[in-house]
Image (cartoon, rainbow, N blue to C red; front, side, top):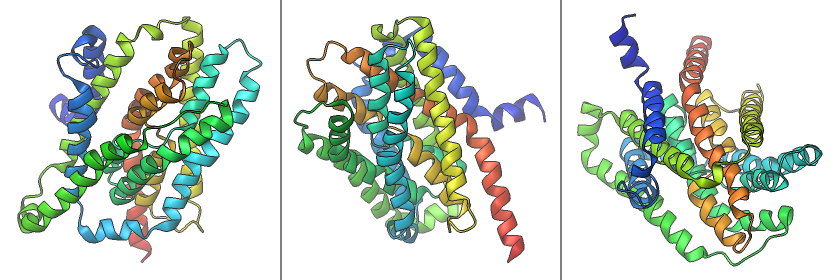
Length: 337
């Protein structure tokens, strides 16, 4: 394979490296409040574009069918909002015996209590070719569920409580998720024949949006003065986070591929990403609300600021491998019929 063909095939991985380097060199451009204004362009426009794009590309019957896939939804939501926090709580009992800062450990617990994101899990599932409709439902439903469940989990594990502005968060999710998705489906009804004939590059559009999200996320990370901690502590937290992500991805893969599970390879892809990803968009505002007045809020926030780019980076790197596995399993299933 020639260099040009290789670049064309691996353009997304190359793009990730380039946007991270750009964020490192000049983070002020994409930081919150910077010229790019990510608090509007990413939080609202980019996320809305992702779900409009999904609504436009998904067949209505696929989306309707996903709503009825109750076993898949139950597995994802139970894993991310029950099993995940409990496992991290047990892990932290051991880590509390180490020299790692206790507030960073509390930050790891807050990460475990967060709902799934409304963007990255959907984009990565779509990039692999998995059950995008199931990913959309679980990302959206998990986010709405997390508005109520996450403060309760934080109270249970950390003893913190506060009033959460449910109405404003619900309205933001409605504007950025529900309306664009419905709008995409309505537009698809008018342009179905054209879309099926021309086959627009929906996957490429979602990948480009993900690169923009990665860029602004790393701009925030690199420009955040609270990240300037002891290098050893940061390295330990980063290693723990990557270990948690890889372990839970392997666990959800194992659970969903058992012979009696009844899940298809495409379902497994959605389960892996939706069960292990955590929302920064909802997470940071929620931490600021729940831990308002805490002098250690910045330290508590650090693990989530690391977890979010780590999940996108790890997921993006694994896309070709997971896609190859899914394709081979689907071919094997067709041969057995």
